[in-house]
Image 1: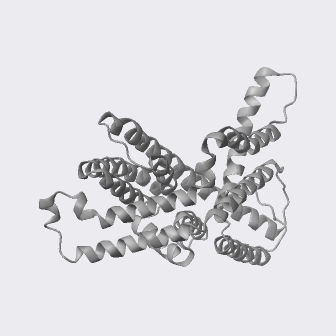
Image 2: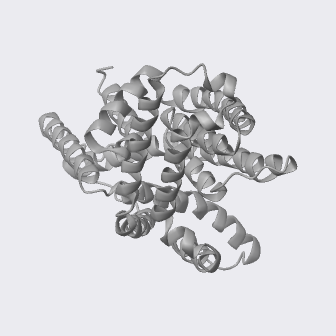
Image 3: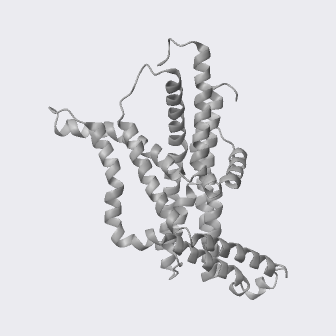
Length: 346
C-alpha cells in the first residue's frame, strides 16, 4: 500500500535518501559499539512473535471459541518469558559453562597450542621425519597466536555477560515492535524507514534463520559423532561440550565457520591420536560438504550471492569490525544488495 500518495515525488525521493543514510549510520553504530547480538535478537523477537500469533489464535479458538483472544500479547509474553524459563531450568546444571565460558575457551586454546607444539610427538615417526625442518618455527608461530587469543579471552567475561544482556533487551524490543499495530498514512520519511526495516527483516529471515537451522543440524550431527560414535571405540575428546557450543556458534558464519570447526576439532582429535584426528576430519568434511550444498540451495538461491562475493565481504568486515564482522557480513551485504536491486542498480 502506498503510504504517502499525496506527497510530491521529489519529497519522497529525499525521504528515501535520508532513510538509507539513517539505516547505514545505524548499522555502523551497531558494529562500532558491539550491539550486533541485540540487533539480531530484535529481528528474532519480531519474527518469532509474528510467526507464533496466528498459531496461538488457532489453539485459543479451538479451546475457547466464544471468547476473544489477545493472541499477539500471548505470543509476545511466551517469546519474552521463554529465555528466562530456559535459563532458570538450565542454570543449576550449566552455570559454570555460561559464566566461565571465556575462561574455558582460553583453556581450550592453550590446549590447542600445546598440541601444535607437540605435533611431531603425536605423529608416527616415519611421518614426523618427513616434516621440513622449518615446521618447528611454524608450529611456534601458530602456538603463540593461539596463546595470544587465549589471553584476550581471559578479559572477556564482562563482555560476554553484557552481550547476553543486550541480546535479551533486543529480544524484548523485537517483541514490543511486533505487538505494535499497523499504521497507515505515514509521512514520507516514516514510510521509507518502515520500508527499510521491512526489507532488513526479510533479509534476516532468509539468511539468519536458514543458517540457524543449518547450524543446528550441523551441531546435532557433531554431537552424535562426539558423544555416541567415538565412545563406541572408547574414545572421548576433551572439551566436548565446548566444542559443540563452538560448532553451533561458528556454524552461524557461512563458509568461514566451517573452516574454524574443521581446524579446532581436528587439532583436539590430534591431541588424542592421529587416527582420531583423521576420523574427525573425515566426518567433518562429509557433513560440511553436505552443508555447502544446503547453503547453495537455501541461501544462495534466495539472495543471489556468489561464494566469492560472500568471502570478499566477510574478509573486509572482519578486518574492520573483528569477529563480529564475520557474523554481520552475510546479513548486511544481502540487505544492501536487496536495496540496490529494488532501486534497479544491480
